[in-house]
Image 1: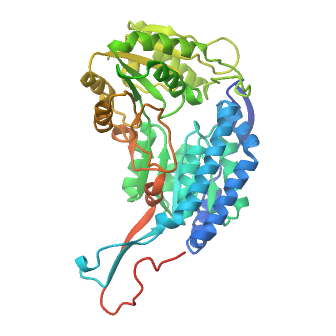
Image 2: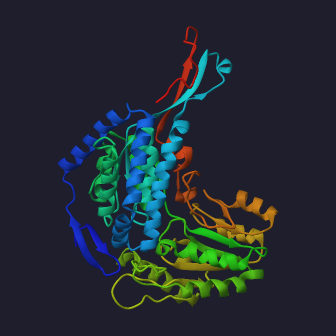
Length: 471
């Protein structure tokens, strides 16, 4: 089977194939994107906002067709795919609206640094390579592309090889919205080409959302080439439930938090750490909720959980569950893939886990929940933080003192209390430890790929102060 292809995970059928770019075609793509940067950096932020709003309008107008392509390529439910397109349009408008403020000159204390004027100016750095995954094939890209393009950078997208149609349609959306030709370019290449791309002097930085090994590879190349990177890697997020929690509500949200996107989300809750006082009640409700979810055709609006994106991914999830069972774990629901076509896996809850089991320390990228019993706040924190990952986290408690402690003690880039971890354009997003570094979204996400330039002006300067810079 060709490496770059649309393969419907609900049927296993190859629907469309693509040839990888030649070395010459890849070089031409980099050149176009670099030339586009020379144009885009000279445009005003107001002009870029017009184009970004036009891109949002196109996403809204074509939402259903874009959603169908995403569902066909990676198996997310059609309903969730529609919501993903809408979220991308919202993010595009957010950055169109907020970019003037995020990029405005920031005045400093001129007297303190013996200057007539002193300020910080944010300017684009050039072509940014984005290496993106298949699980949120539009949103993962948009949360990079919207702030990068609004800052005046250009984007070079190397998407996952199983979502080529989604990758190409996003390039087409930005082109039709009015951005200069090449401002956002999709390259259909194998992952082996990433070294060549990032080593090219015309490419100034990279952002990656993906696995820990992929992050290490990108960081190694970028370190050699002295180029900026932002890495959002895996997660094994804790979902802590304390005695004061609303157990019914926690069990309801836990079901969505574990099975969103068919369980294939870096910030999906994966390890459910429950105080012994409410453990039995939570476990019963949670397992019942998980077992009640409908698995099936992702295009059916009544389906809750579609197929996993690949046969290999489904087999890996099942291997992790079997390893736990073989070593003494208990399956409360699910645990066996159904027969028939497609790469489906049932919502599964596993308890009685021990450190010898793979599920104790590994990320499970499918609708499988690990359930842990703890007897105190301190033990809950120990288990929650006892992983190499640190992306998102959830804590359920109505005790305000505990809420404050969780906000400080959970070792993660995101802490959500009495709610499900998600991403918003308004809030920074990223992780710590082996979940990566740097931040996406908010003003911080835009400035990650800006030259934060100090400007110091001495005697004889014009009277205009910081902020005279206007686009």
